[in-house]
Length: 410
Image (cartoon, rainbow, N blue to C red; front, side, top):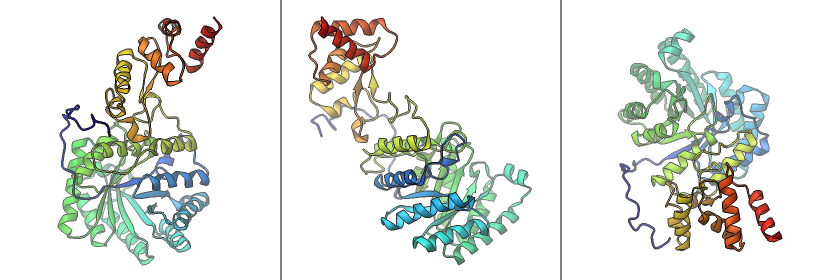
């Protein structure tokens, strides 16, 4: 840590809350809900296994392995992933999605027996009045079906997380009846789902508080999950609110992939929870994890994607670059990583990048050359600077090297 670190150079106006007493458990849905995006590629099993090992090293608590009842490929992939967890003695707690029917639970029980590890069944049923109307179901029928499925899972030694779809648009009395039944039947966890990305931060906090109160009154040790989507681009903030309101396991997917516009991006959840002081683990492998998911699933990383995007720590603006360069010239990487960044790049295995373009100053040019051990003669600096002012884009490395070669030729 540098001399300037923690020396009062940053005044934080964020309203800090006390970190809740419950441990934050992060749950990665990339290999289940993430693959439900209509635009992604379902990766080969070798890629899925590599992705799962990244989850383990990054300190995820649990991971969704898929929906094994969906067909032979889905079954075999889940079996291979569960087998890898067992073989390498991973800490990841696996679970699989299932409808509240016996045929979806049987494959999970089989895979448990074959691998010798516990696999939680995330059994889901709709809960909102709009879904009840479309399906022609009432709450009594939903309770009967759910109770039978939970009992069947328990008879087969399968732990249960009871998931209500579209919870954020469900009536309080429906939520109470469904979750109370699940709690009474000793499920491990209950999961609040913002299935269509309807919730706002205040709504997420209110709903989680309501559900957490149900659990507290029961006196049972039942975990509360939050599963949020990003249709209104509120996935990250809703997940943070849910945690502070009492949800102890938070779901997300790498790069925010998933149904429609996707789930809360778990990589950005990790960044925010790290900066909030909620989690402490080393996250320098996080960019490599995101790049792997991008490659395996065929999902490009947007250039302006926070933290992981190409432009996240890259500037060609003279004023910004000059401040960063001055920090580096002080020999202070802590300062350089914060002077023009709300996210310190080095904490996530990244670094500040200074480019040369139409908005650059000569300090950009000198820094670029210095990083590559190229002598920054005034003639060369002037040549590159003049070209940067002439063009309408940030100069590529190839363009700059071409100018250097011309200068050498002269």
